[in-house]
Amino acid sequence: MATATATGKRMYIDGQWCAADDGRTLGVINPATEEVIEEVAYGGRAETRRALEAAHRALPGWMKLTAWDRAKILKKTAELMRERVETIARTLTLEQGKPLAESRAEVLHSADTFEWFAEEGKRAYGEVIPHSVPGKRHLTLKHPVGVVAAISPWNFPVTLQARKIAPALAAGCTIVSRPASQTPLCLIQVFECLIDAGLPPGVANLVIGPAQEMADEFLENPICRKISFTGSTEVGKQLMRGCADQVKRLSLELGGHAPFIVFPDADPEIGAKIAVTGKFRNNGQVCISPSRFYVHKDVEKKFTEAAVEFARALKLGNGLDPGVEVGPMFEKKALQSTIELVEDAKRHGAKVLTGGKRCDRFDKGYFFEPTVLTNLSDRAKIMTEEPFAPVMPLLDFSRIDDVIRAANNTRYGLAAYVFTNDLTVAWRMAEGLEAGIIGINDPVPATPQCPFGGMKESGLGRELAHEGLEAYLETKYVSFKLRDS
Image 1 (cartoon, rainbow, N blue to C red):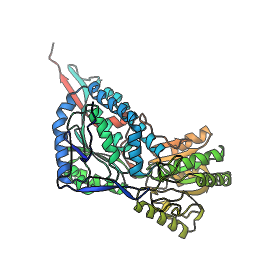
Image 2: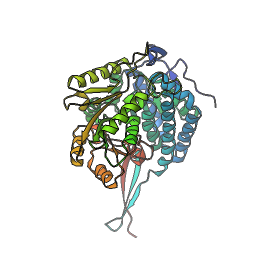
Image 3: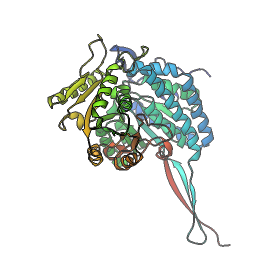
């Protein structure tokens, strides 16, 4: 099947690639070179409304397909993503900045998500419920929520949309996807995979444009029955308020401030390697990135020395260059925020052990040195605000109850990490930490078959796993009164 190319026409509505109604475009910038990669269509509310209407028209036909027929399209999409992984990964690195190896892993993880939900869609089971009144029978059926809006940020532009598109389509919903305006190109290529896999017109639509304007259409248009959002806690709260008027369904995966806790029973050098791997992946621009490192006093010195050594050894550069482990920050604004975050910590007494400034080896690009801080004050912003930055603050502790209390002392509850070989300690931490995702000796815990989501102000609901499918289904209860025999 020939690829349905999106060249020059960058939104996808009702089975057609299209420009913005008024011809507006937006330049996509490479954060490693600060150059414009490509101009893309930049739509608005009218295009969003048309996309919702197209999804609404396509909904009855898509719902009527069997789960097996929908699965064929999702599986084929996964196959095509794997075949085109190098092309999509290169595009992802160009527009987002992460090293090519990380981009490749993101595309393959997303392909796995499509394949997993292709199968999980076949298990949208209802149940037969024992009756208590003679002559009655009770059962439940699963019904698609309807038309879904998917809003995602720039840090994982393929993964975060795949976690919404795949379960929504598997459940029988239709969808309108709105990626971050700064990183739409790799998702366009994923949509090409969906199209070439045989997706009917209108079932999945792609719009690019201003976040607030498009969100307003999603919120106010009754066609849209659910919004799935990944992003900041502040925007999540705005969406909650907006959804109230129509009691619109909502899934939220929001901010995090994950603790990483190192106990003395395990090798501190190995722990430091795991910690650095988790912290500096995608420059710390990860919602589940560890951001407060609590190290037991008995191993503090060895851990700190090893962490500094590993951080200094990381290769910084253009994500397309061989061997690069840390690319540029996503945009100039993110770079400036990181500079201010470190300066604030220093004003409150923090000591920089390595890094701490914009990398001066590059004439262009938003490069910041991997940074390790110690002597942190509770008043420093990095201790209370979500730090989307390559900055690793080290703290110490001596008692398990104290570190649990400190780790939980945040409005966030998305992820937490523990490094220990003691089973009792591991269980106490798993039960005591207030986080939806807990990695024990595992800095990268996300996988399609396991639930992903947070507690407290880190979100509502779960993505991935069977919970991720349930998020796009309604439960219908049916009661039968039989004729008297």
